Image (cartoon, rainbow, N blue to C red):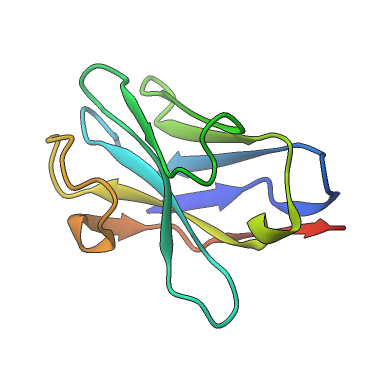
Length: 123
């Protein structure tokens, strides 16, 4: 199981730190964050390789968000900086089906999902 936390209400330009704690080992599986705003489809935000720590980001968050992982703690993090109102969404963490760091933006490539944590950015 994955447990996401750290969401909240923040003003535009502010920052938040999200955490995703796994009840089991995340090992060398790639991990990712997705988000879903009301009335919109779930979209990819960021992913991180389990083998070399290489990150991948959606264009909309590049330069503002940072994904990291601590495999010893079985935890993945997402630091959100310079937040914008359009970042408002429920943020989900997910574990990829395999260690391969390909097709990372596709929700179907992930088999375990957290329950989500709400991020609200006010203007």
